Amino acid sequence: MNERPRITIIGAGLAGTLLATLLAQRGWKVEVFERRGDPRVFGYAGGRSINLALTERGLHALRQADADLGVMRQAVMMRGRMVHPLDGEPELQRYGRDDSEVIWSINRGELNIVLIEAAEAAGAALHFDRRLESVDFDAGTFLVKGEGHEESRRFDTLVGADGAGSTLRAQMMRRLDLGERTEWLDHGYKELEIPPGPGGSFRIEPNALHIWPRGHYMCIALPNDERTFTVTLFMPHEGPHPSFATVADGETALALFREQFADAVPLIPLLEEDYERNPVGTLGTLYLDRWHIGDRAVLLGDAAHAMVPFHGQGMNCAFEDCVALADRLEAEDGLEAAFAAFEAERMPNAAAIQHMALENYIEMRDRVDDGDYRLQRVLELL
Ligand code: FAD
Image (cartoon, rainbow, N blue to C red):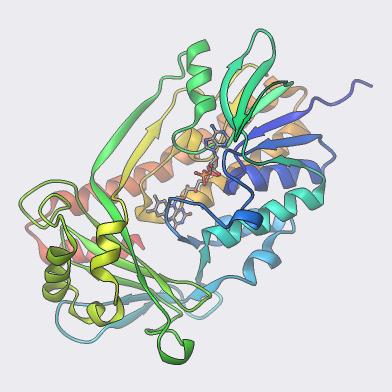
């Protein structure tokens, strides 16, 4: 019997580590290369949203890898959305009839560490501080660089789990036109923090996703298990309404919050400093016509289908990709058939979720003259 090919995964983020776990558990030889340092040693150096909404889709995938219990120990239940109107008291709208229908807030760094440990425990070899630079598909080699380190390595097949700005995707594009196009949103986002209250308690209701919907812009806040909340302000990059161009510094941001998010102001003591220090993130939708090149390379997660976050489903969708690819690698005869079947199964699903997230955003943006409608749309999203 021929030996199974070795699977080389680029990126030990959320999808890369879950896929490594699933494949190693099924007896595949798996190696993973991650450009960042090991977060267990250096702390988590993520530049992207600090906590994420985990839904049943993602949880189902984590169960397949027996990683759900470790993850859920860190999760905070969100049983509904707590809507903060401009005037009046916040109101909780439950997601379901009872606590069997809830979503979970999970810290990205903690989740990543649980999955890194799961991948190693399953037998995958993880290499940190190893950034993919280039791929020579003819020679079957790839170049990685790290601090004072440069190395060319051989591969059998490559999996791109290296996120929205995927280097592997760029290298594949040099070989074959994948039909790549990205639609950028005119909204961006900035993160702020609600620290723990006196005595280390949560300052507002912990078991809810808090929303301050304000039409053109909004804030949301998700709880963290260390009793903080990550606040995300979504706002247009440009324009006369409050935008990141007009709200350019901490002082103007504080004035906006005092006017529009008054109940949040006492909760965010470092609002001005955080606003000036934290970058404005960009949001976009990535479309590809092809996710793989024969049996040589395949993309998944954000590297294949980054999406806007208005459904909170990017990670959940990436986790579903991992299960689908692992299943196809078991079921199909050879890598190329497995990659093709994976692409055929997942591309329409990812496109549907991308579309729903974007459609809701566009409706929210364009129906700007109808306050009730806008509010309603935002509430349906999260
Ligand atoms: P990533 O998490 O980006 O991981 C990629 C990994 O590859 C990283 O570790 C990176 O360091 C590494 N890497 C990159 N380049 C290289 C290289 N050249 N060589 C080696 N390694 C490399 N999704 C949800 O499901 N729920 C939410 O609530 C949610 N909220 C969001 C809020 C915001 C503001 C944003 C922007 C996104 C949100 N998402 C959410 C989407 C979610 O963050 C992504 O879908 C998810 O992180 C995708 O996982 P991934 O593993 O594909 O990519």
